[in-house]
Image (cartoon, rainbow, N blue to C red):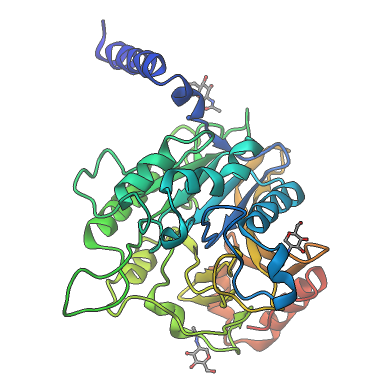
Length: 405
Ligand SMILES: *[C@@H]1O[C@H](CO)[C@@H](O)[C@H](O)[C@H]1NC(C)=O
Ligand SMILES: *[C@@H]1O[C@H](CO)[C@@H](O)[C@H](O)[C@H]1NC(C)=O
Ligand SMILES: *[C@@H]1O[C@H](CO)[C@@H](O)[C@H](O)[C@H]1NC(C)=O
């Protein structure tokens, strides 16, 4: 056999063995792909804080709501969001369970993700700082998640055996079926374990994204860029990417009400040390937006060095919140460029909005996070008021609530 055939044979053979050992496994390896309308939508669920289900009470709802409120309200909200948005991917950004309230971690995890599992939509999760506080370690929690139905979560990359944390991986979203970009990743989604707490006694507080994770991120980013730019159908610009994790980067504190969309009702609880991941992201250049949770009362998006730093806002009912301030969820939609010949190109725009768990599932704060080519020209023109203002007017017509920058 030629070497190519031999390696192909090996891959097929391994898949065959895997499918014998784990019947659900191969079926679960699903390729994410833009739909025939050139769109791909991600639903973010942050901080479910799931406990034991119907016996676990809600926090920070009105006293009159307490008797009828439990974890089941969190599940109902996941179901409503899935039904309303019909996402192509669901991403859970940590504190999926609130370990101290969960008697048996496996049971709580199964219950927490049940609505995603039953939807048959691919879903992915990362860890927060509370997931390991029940009967499983962080490794144990992530291993349990990886074995669940319909998930495309992974434990860690095979090419980074010594990486810190559990649940560092990336998901590649291919172009429209049958289009020129059928076999290319036109949108890349990084998922990272931002840790729980510092293990360094001289730096108390939350964890951070370590050097080993940043090295893997850089390597992956380079690999993806090379693939996108190489034949066949070599692309000129790198494909955009998104990053999801739990704990805010220190740079989330760079904004005030004049330059973010959404609200900031509590401090930014990042680690007490800056591990440099923001700089790494800026250097790599592919990540256009970062999405986190952790601070339930913050739900804003702000842009720094052309990278959007976004919160999702608290989702779960057994999590601190604010009575009268609805639990919420963030949606991201990427849209491909329609080519002159009618085919689909690379990603043209990335939009976001949030939905509230009120009677109408109200949509709030729609924003355009990124547009192909525009960020370069925005920079050039940022001091020329007229052209920029023209641009903003156009966007405002489309989206009434588009924020002033
Ligand atoms: C929780 O769910 C129950 C049952 O559907 C409902 O009656 C109650 O209003 C919900 N509570 C909140 C705070 O949404
Ligand atoms: C994608 O890859 C498959 C399998 O290798 C091949 O049959 C197909 O022609 C490729 N499509 C494009 C658009 O490159
Ligand atoms: C936001 O505006 C404040 C001034 O109101 C400024 O200090 C800060 O640097 C701005 N942040 C960004 C990221 O532009």
